[in-house]
Length: 302
Image (tube, rainbow, N blue to C red; front, side, top):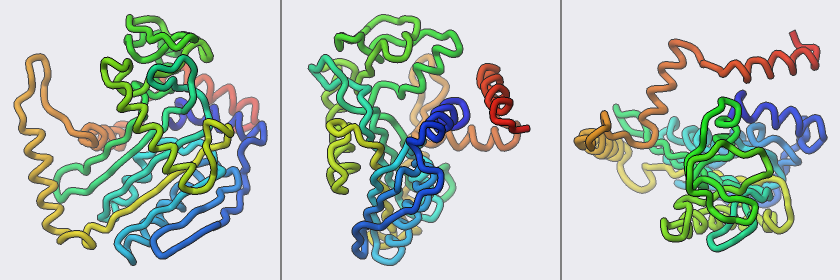
């Protein structure tokens, strides 16, 4: 996401008028704990923080809050929005699903859905927060593009050929449009029905529940879903934070298997990387910097 991958797409979509740079968000339905928003073709990262904060505010008042967003562009990392809730002492949840056809269903030969990411975040007292943010595919599509730019190979079981046949050996990354993605599990024998089921449930929550309609059928822009849970509405918050520390410490104290340095949980490495980046800066591949320089020159940005 971000500069390395997302920004090029956003520039192109603003240029083609697919995205609206001056959207007017419209609340189309609302209850005490829920809200549905028409984003007016806003980029997802434009409407996302606004929608997630509404979910958090509802959770503060009523214990839980959920906001569905329709008619929106790419949301980028779902974990960012889930962490908004965790940083305010809540459990956060975020999903997104669009109308793109990138991923083949189990037993299928043609793609019917996008990567349909999902994220959860939960705070702890002293341990770094739990943050789980994944696509429902073996890898996000950006990882294929990154391998292509850097000259790396991709693992077997990540993609299919254009007939939907899984490619199970390590290969050079194919060009965009010459492959489809596989759901988590890769093949039916390895559990791809689980990833496919998660992706389909994501689609239902993000698009059908909001009344937006089936993205894969209609080819509509993205639908997103944001949810926040006030811990105090379920249990004592202080006990929860202590219990989270106990749980996460228990996990990282597991002896590592041969060949591995330590056991990680989702969010631990991200927390460490964030602290390192704040101290040392963010490294970029030369190709990314060259694109930035080229685009800035074209746009007259100095």
